[in-house]
Length: 625
Ligand code: DCP
Image (tube, rainbow, N blue to C red; front, side, top):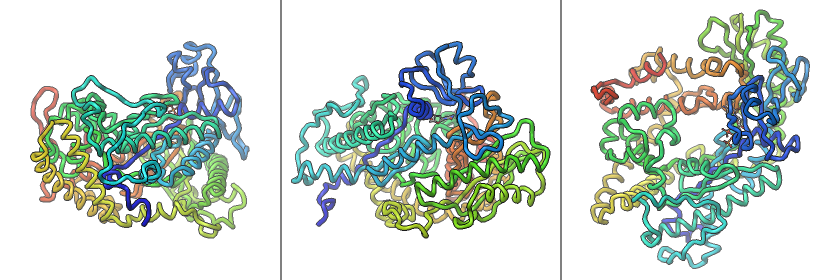
């Protein structure tokens, strides 16, 4: 019998998650490259703006998006490093001393390369690593931790008494003794004590991972260790830089009580604004006064149950293995706009060179090769970018950047000319393992099985069990309910969450259909204009939202630079618009929940306490109009 068969069920039901985030990432890459000690104030500059600021410079009051002039006024000793750029005719990015926006193209390759090395280390420790951005990841370490626990307690079974945990040397342990929601250690039940053991073992593992990153690469990072992604993420910032924080179950309500609810994952965008407006709340604790029924009535079954849980720190979202970006993009905005094909060819050469370098780098690191080459371009008169695509050159056919540059120009020429052109981007999409290359990493195989939703029913059952268990134990702490009434409540919740799960399964099946937005329009009573405007805003806002001092190359920021394919609508979405984009699907989901076909009606108490009713299509109009 395998070891995991003997792990008590309550430990198998509790997920253990790490969220690791590098400190002032771009700055650290420059510190290491230039061998500058970390206590010297340093900032990374792009044109005349700052995109990363180290902790020594933050002490002097300097923030990201300060201008160079403001930063130097606050801290004359500040060391400024301009990001690498491609100059005219150069095939490699370099750290030019005075690059010009008109002639140079930003390259974030040094940070991407550093990121790839960091993720290799993550992967060495754990095979479920979800890349959240260029410098942060979630890791599901449940199985590793449970098997370590079995090694430490070989006789562990369902009835074993948990010894006290010694929390010394495991990082900061979040404590909030001020609220009445935190039980004393003597009131924590035996199962929760074993769950504390899980966190303690995870904290030790996390410290080892952070230590490896520091020893091998010289970068410090901070981390959160908790029973779910939301809590791990929320507590990883509590002891930055170079610190880690453990969030025990018993402390969770105390932590969430005063948490501004819009800091919670998925609630940071416009969806959070709608909830604030509808419910008139600011903190997660203020959401507790709404019963699960009330939340479901207002927001639908799935969202209501999710909101009920998430404001109490309950989150059943899985860590999905994805440790590399699914696509890569090189882009440039033009001010003044390009007026002729010659200029396009010039920039196609630079974009092609950047994309070539990244594809080759990625192939060396991850043995992946793209399926398609896509260009996106926009002229002054267009509100939305247009795109054209062709198959990506096969590996045996790609000998130099020129092949890609020529294809970019050809794609542009084959489209209706878009002059004056304000933006041109080229992306390599559909990156997949190149099967012609040697062996396939076994962890990828496991990941594919997970992605493909194998054992969906088992996973979902597991999810429901975890969720109800957590809600029940949280409610017990929260309301001090006697066990019998809790059982009743849990039965109701089980029902609700079973429905929730069925809905999720149906949604998975519906995903394929959902790729056609026009269908969604009909189904959800949104005009195509609503949806188009949403995407126009989502994709076109990049330029206008960027501060003037930082003209927006699309490789400007980590977020803009990294595009991800949305599996719900098959659109390429810049990372910095993920939250809003997820909101969009979330809102569609709200609409979908209305089984009877009636429009979802949100009853809003606005600030003037006048009641107003609005359906979800107004929500889109307000957002995009
Ligand atoms: N970045 C950027 N533009 C932004 C946000 C981030 O170019 N608007 C880049 C620079 C950062 C890196 O991405 O170094 C990681 O972003 P984080 O938000 O994680 O910020 P830092 O790592 O710089 O600092 P912290 O220690 O606060 O996480």
